[in-house]
Image 1 (cartoon, rainbow, N blue to C red):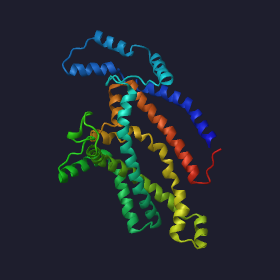
Image 2: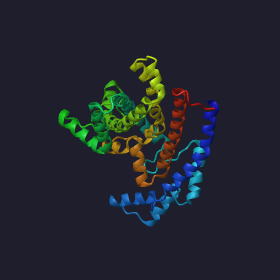
Image 3: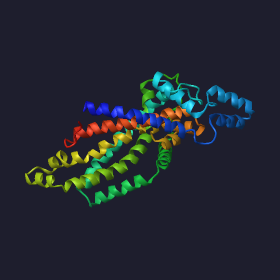
Image 4: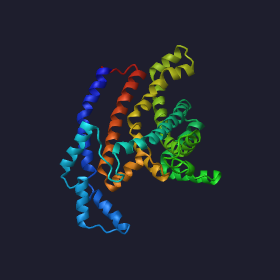
Length: 330
């Protein structure tokens, strides 16, 4: 197992070099650069920006250099010094910006993950065991509705319902009295944070559980028709023990394998939901950075997504080997 983990991380090195180059090229493909966005914002506010000012700003930010020079300088600072550069928009270290937003993103995403599993596991098992029953058809219909409704529309509906019946507007991470860095952490502030995270957790959790229910149902139905289930039933095992000892355990494999795609959502964390609800998560930060071509901030976030994909896939492989004895890694 240790040799497998070592080989996986070793093989990831050329992958990250290739991804970093691809990311750096892609984020500079749109016409213009950050200085053009900055000049447009200054002109919109009534300030005058001439060609000399734009040239000086490009020289200050290093955007007047060829793309390959900018990439070598950026990647060498990351590898040698762990420095991801400074954000043009915020004039702050990229690592500090990502660290500030990741805590809230992790809370939202982990809560959504647990909610989706808590919903999908029992419903998926019930639909497979009681397939073609009234309950199965009802849960199938609900799953299709959950897959069809866009997350941003569900966010708007829940915000309206909360405002209509409670009189509170649950947008952002904190209520007005708890906003600002000068407000110290307390139980009341933490409870207010949890209250504001309820809507995004429900939205992302429902969207994820809708597809997981279908996956669990299909895989469990396939396992229930296998010969080993018939043999175990013939030996006199009770239905509940037979169900959870063998077929459910095997059908869980697709759930575990989703970790490879779940961990990257720690960064994008339901971007559309974050924008609708005014959540300062990493996903919204990535969206804003791409809009203004903040190359160091967007590049670091995209690299983090790739890193989490590799780590998530590795964790899912290890858990699959533990969960299913038929899987072995040398």
